[in-house]
Image (tube, rainbow, N blue to C red; front, side, top):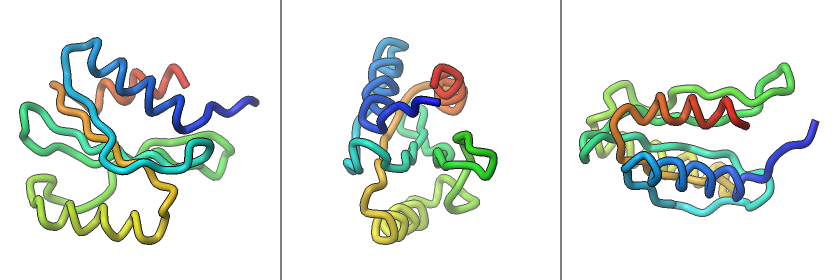
Length: 112
């Protein structure tokens, strides 16, 4: 099975978000080929979940909600992202500001 490069997937996610009327930006650039992708979801500036694309045991990618239990705790959220970035410098961190960002990520994931 051909695996799409992380940079391609991030670019696709940014374009889909902007086409749907939202805002998307790269907060931290990871490895272009195989970096893990962490999506910081929000809606009109209101913090939502952190979603991480990980390689599952079955050989397919999965999306999991990660980070602090309270997504509105900005300090804990920032600390989590800093810790993840230190452990994995190839990590992409992407911010989406759009209504129902997790649904958009799920639709995008279905394409990949």
